[in-house]
Length: 249
Ligand code: CDP
Image (cartoon, rainbow, N blue to C red; front, side):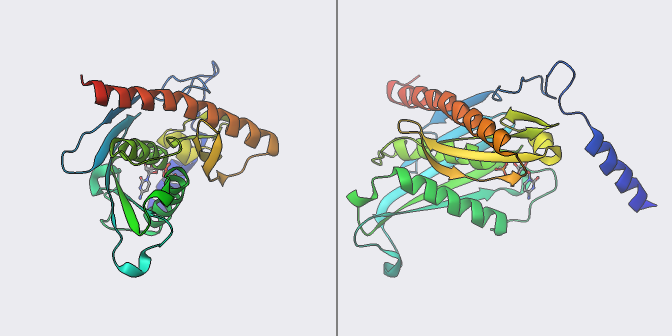
């Protein structure tokens, strides 16, 4: 009996229309529109740098500590510094309480974010050190790795860490057969593909690219350029947030 109820529920969800006849999505956005985003830099007193981002219903805070001597010593690189990012979702950030502590997903996200940030930081300037970046997802609604990475790069800038450029991330994907920008939770759950992308906007160098689901070559190209356009809009917001932190409010 219960199984049947669950099956019916799944079927209903699968048939749920995510884009209406006017091309509007469930939150009223068009295909190429970002969710509303707010960023604030310098939100924590005891970190060397910090930032907070609200992106749709996502809420993420990022903090930077360092550069400081890497411990234990065997992780030190005598030629350059290392970036160790830690992505964490708090228990109450998702609908079903999340078990505290690292899991496969958060370990993977921490790794790819570390690599994306390391591409931007001029690590050769501080050998043997580590820069620790901590991201806490307080509320999640799909796109948290992009929100975390975007906030983390602001926190690095706030800490005065020398970088080639800011890193900014945004996803595109496929929903109801259409390529769309910045998927929210229902679109991520019941859509056909999700493509998170991070770039350094000045050079357009891609520092993170993942794909969940299936896209044709043509759809992939469209999703990638849509995500890059999204990143460029977010980059302007990042620069504004940094200016506000210097000028004060
Ligand atoms: O957040 P992001 O899109 O980067 O990662 P995801 O693995 O594609 O997860 C999509 C969304 O699923 C998250 O943002 C959460 O809203 C949700 N989720 C959840 O409800 N419980 C989890 N343990 C993990 C993710």
